[in-house]
Length: 264
Length: 269
Image (cartoon, rainbow over all chains, first blue to last red; front, side, top):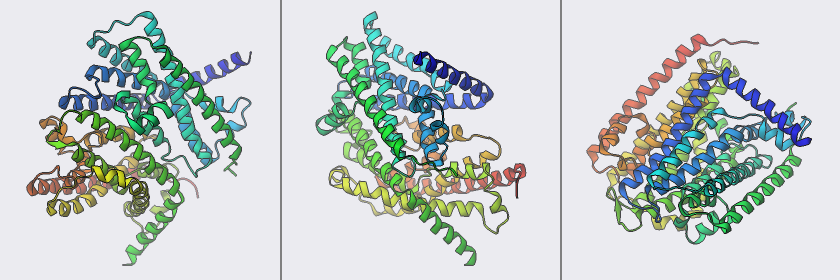
């Protein structure tokens, strides 16, 4: 029953977001263009580098495009579902507007994370999918239904990991004066999701492959399409998603205890 | 002198208010080392099996990105567009209309203070990482590159600030300017050379980019400091175009201010 209650709440928020988007159509078009341009920047970097080299850590241009496309897909989903909510949380804690969420009759993290959805983020999801499909065709891939299902599961795990990482960064606002600039840390880490795992060696592999799940969120799904399903990787990614979600939720709740309203 | 004193005070207040957020700047600078690690790994992998890309070796390419990172904290506009926008939207700008103070100069004083704080704080993590970074630094020998880099850096800061100021001015016409700012940031990231050195672009696109203001926001001084601008003549040409953009953008900023104020309505007592 509680689940249905929260589903209804979320649907109400979706309705509110759609109405709001329709009210500010120009803004919606502008943001869609912004996101599209950023995607082009990431793909452009790959294009420029491969004009001067044939391989990055053993990955050819279309394998890298598949990897970057996967990263873009997860990030578009994050932007669509959670980015604005968590970004605004950082500002709200500083201004005291966070009181509004604390006073709501519902699970606080749910209220904070789902108040708005960004349709412009979702608009670019088909484009990210298009990039992945195009790269797969260039590589001559013909994935089975099982591979596609596991790939979809990995994208879901990737979304959970990205949400958790972003929440960890934004929750720092409870300790710092403001979250200004802190969200940049998330984007810094996210860059590693566009690197092949083989490019990381020594300390960087320990940090960005094993300690932080930033590289595996895209490498594992991409490898599933390229080389088939690997069950050890599946277990690794699912376990990483659960671990990071627990860590982020704990950090958020510890941080909330420090919150003292800033409003008068 | 008295007229300059008020901007000195604005600068000092800017220093104080930015020092409040010292931890944010320090955290941001530390995170930028994460970006640098990504750049090192990506370009290290791209250089595997070859000694040079577009005429530059791995050390020269990595030096470019290190210089770019340091410059970012000393000269780039960070939140200035949003701050101007907030002051217009919330009516805080009204107080400047009644006082003998130039709003552009006031904001520039605050910008200079903010960059002094952010630049100084950014040096801390970079100094800590320097034993590792120095192994990858390869700076050019000719003295003229450094002499040309000084005015180039000052003008880059002016272009950075004025562009941000112009975007802030758009608030007179639009309720929300964030999308314009992020779109401009995306263009700047590419044509400012932050994603890759611009000389890796096809020749015609590189030539075209050298006429855009974005080229002079960051790439031009970084290219001078890392030897990617080959001759004094090329540097002089760049300084000339950069000077043009400083004045052109200032003109646009003044135009937006005058036109914007015509639309502005000050409400309240």
